[in-house]
Image (cartoon, rainbow over all chains, first blue to last red; front, side, top):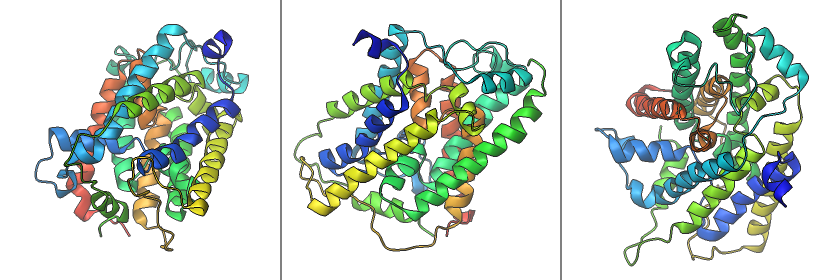
Length: 189
Length: 160
């Protein structure tokens, strides 16, 4: 039991739990599970401006998912304090990323690229600020993210979700194979 | 063009005049998912890189089995005509065929570009912040800026 709580979980444990969320949230309150709408809720709550898109009753429509987002932060915190995660990725990936100049493979993310110090480097800035912007813009344009489209949408066999997920992968492959080598340039940032 | 889901969203404004909704189950759900996302390492930039380099089955196994289990659940709800325990209508997507418009192609690809760079989609942004990767707050604010930009440009972007 302690082992299950502290060691990395295999895909066949994590995947079904994540998948169960979809029917569970439907059966609890009839809602379609998705996370990225919380970004829209926060915008609607803070600075809706004159945009019709951001003027809606975010409390009623978004209260549940904003609460879930708070739970995600809390869950991440609890998982983080109970065990420091070092991610055992494949040696091929380690070799590829080393060739891009990454040396620190400890933790969940490379500190060289995702830390407050990294924000001052050109690569870190583009990855954090540029990546974040595209994630926010893209989810709202496509009306869903990995949870809403890849999990909820595909689970409901929606064609629009399939197209969105194809887009997710096209974009991700371009970032991985073209943008990252350009940004990191093979040298340490 | 108004994206269909947005319209659905507005329609589903559940009348809650009587008493405030019970929210703690969603907090609990978030905590469970936060722990699962961390323990299964889906919040890791390294894992996302491994996925986009096709060097491990891990992420594909997670997404694939999640979709399979989710689809099974949705089919059971549909076939048995199950009702929600809080008596709210179940908002299953309607099956009317519609060719996916530009919003899914361009929006999806924009999201993917960001996902590949940041190595985190919306759920993991929250979870990583909780894990102590506090610089994700900047990614979060940046994502909000992305949403604002979309809201401002919405009328001029191709959707269908």
